[in-house]
Image 1 (cartoon, rainbow, N blue to C red):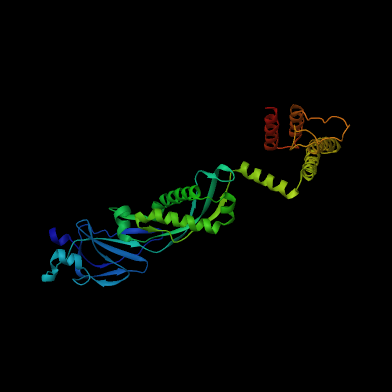
Image 2: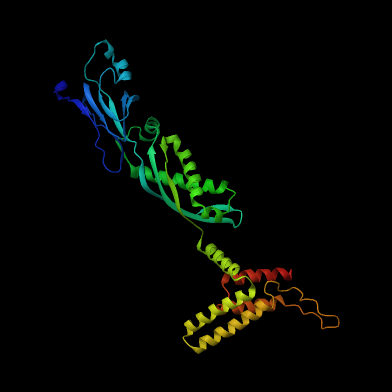
Length: 334
C-alpha cells in the first residue's frame, strides 16, 4: 500500500487513566498533520521528540501545530521556507498533578544511635505525596523509551528513598527518640525535606510527608513503661506495694482460690522484705550504729540473688528486673 497505508493524525490528546503517570502516543507509521491540534489538559505536560532528542514541550492549553508553536521542529524541518507537509515525531504526555494518599513504612527496623538509649531499632510509617516537578529531567532519568508508566511502577522506589532518608535524618539528629516522637510535626518536616532533596535528581518533588507512627521494639517499650511506672510511684516502698498487689491478683487468678492468694501473700511479703532491706544498695554497709551498739551487718549478695530468683520464679519480678539486680549484685562481689 506504500504511502496510502499511512494515516495523518490531526488531533493529539491524552485521556489519562487512574494511576497512570506517563503515556507515549502510539505513532507507529502515522505522521502528524501540519496544523493538527494538540490538547494538553490541566495537570498534564506534553513533549515532542525529534529523532529521539527532546525538542518542543507544552504546558496545559490548546495548540495548533504550526511554525509558531513548534519552533525547534520548524527549524529542523525548514518549514519557515514554506514546507508544510506532515511530520514524524514522538509525543509523550506526563501527569504533573500531585499524587496524594500514598503510604510509606519501614520494611525492617532501622538501627540508629540514640543519646539516651544507645543503639536502638526504630519502626515508622506514614503517608506522603509526590509529583513530577521537572518533566524533562523525569523523562531523561526515568521514563526514557517506555511506552507508559504507572504510579505502582515507581512507588517501591519512593518508599525506599523515604526509608533511607529517615535513617539519615535520625542518624544525624542529636535529639533523643522520645523528643522526636513527641514532636512528629518537626520530624515530618525534616524527613520531607531530606526525601525531596533525594528525589530532585529524578525531577520528582515531595510536597507533603507525614510521620504517623514512630515506635521502638516491644521489649524496649516495656522497659520504658516499667521505668515510667516506678517514677510515677516515687519510692521503692510504694513500688514494693505495687508489685505485691500485682502478685496477689495474678496468683489468685492462676490458682483460683485461697491457695493462690496465700502464695501471692508469701511472695509479696518477701518482696517487701527485699525492698525494705535496701535492694538498690545491696552489699553496702548499713547505717553506722550508735557508740557501743552492735556491729553493723552486711547483706550477702549471693543470698540476695537467691531471694531475688525466688521472687522471679514466683512472678513478683520480671526477667528484666531480675537480670538488672543480679548484675548489680555480682558487680559488688568484684
